[in-house]
Length: 568
Ligand code: ATP
Ligand code: MG
Ligand code: MG
Ligand code: MG
Image (cartoon, rainbow, N blue to C red):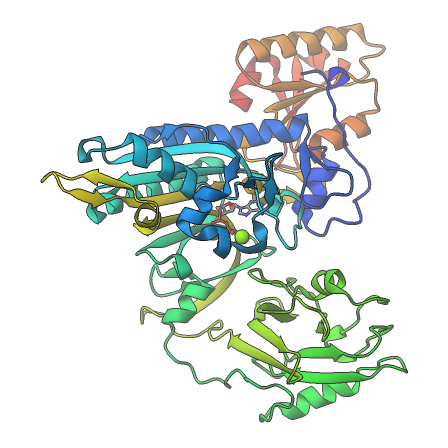
């Protein structure tokens, strides 16, 4: 590729609305663009798409290796199918529902259990056809309440979803193990630091589930590891198994919480200054330690809150004019089914008249500490917190071996033994060996292809931009010729090397723009191209190129005939 015929689309300035480094770099390096002002909708520009396709290819290859068969299912799904599984009612607002011209109801597929089950119940009749696995790589739509961090939590995103079918649970176990291993291979090949953790099977039931997390401080999920064994679980799962720790109880009624640490919270709230003419009510919720009190404020009256100040824990919100649902979720991370802001020193502000304040997550004075299941009881004028994080760093591991460390992760994959949840409700049976109808056992296996691109950047960047792992770099080599405008020799050498590398199957970008060297270097570094070769008159005289790896600071002069050894 030549930059003169390629949309480089790099930006010098950091876009102001991008909080996460990966989001900033994806915009700055010209990988993605947000579609107008629509939250969670992104276009993949040429460079971004190259990376996305590489991730996709690795995932596809590993799925093929475990014998999963690729197919492609419709994105638009009829409501009838979802009625059959019961999820038309259950799924909630993430399901984008629509009607066709005949007023028939449909949804945009957030996942495809119903569709695949409907196919298999018709086309797989005998145990002899089992086990079988299918996968697709396809756009999903979830109407996320808080789309954020670019493609990390988008509304439209690319997922690989696979489904397996079995005559019994032993067979399901076997495929599950293979898929688990395939996932490890995928993340190994991607060159990412990741952990597989036990996940809660939650409302879906079933016997086993694992999430794959790319480790990153910016991750939205907390995962718990034992330092004395291989135990690793997401925090929700670890909590369900955690031995009872002695810690203050989560308060059920928080109008006033009487605990030994009350005083420090009162001291804290003394520093809260709220502008006049506000009738404010302060509800206090105690945090785990004196250092980390969590404060919930309740607004009443005319929703005008101008300043919130506190000496400790920097409870400083930007001046707010209107506290509405949007604003609340924006500043406080009140959301159902998702964690609040990471490390934001902002208290939860609850508009008592807001209608959507059920089961949200609040409190973020500490990176890893949130209350979950908070509910605002409007009539009783109380806030109730059902669930208080009950494991923290240093607690005993649920397996009895060692102590827990808590780290943050980005969920990039999730595998699940579904059992007969869908096959039973949707009537997917096969004839077993003794000729009797048996309900199919089912597994499902998801990977967030587009999220992986962002997660890879969270783990691989520096002050100058992205540092792609070689396996997913948009280009392997950047050729940067010096003074090509004037030096015919440089131009010729650059063209020659460009040809040579291409003939050897190397993906190369030749910066043939008439830009200053600084601009070209900056762009190639921002885009994260692993190998850079500079061609200059001086080098040509000496028979060398200047070589630099994106991860290194050192440049070295290499013999021209040695170039392939350096980059392959
Ligand atoms: P999360 O907990 O982040 O909301 P999830 O548990 O709802 O994710 P799954 O239903 O397990 O997601 O979907 C499989 C994979 O799809 C996830 O592991 C994740 O990598 C990816 N994914 C889910 N939601 C999104 C999204 N909104 N944007 C990008 N990728 C997503
Ligand atoms: Mg989700
Ligand atoms: Mg999840
Ligand atoms: Mg999941």
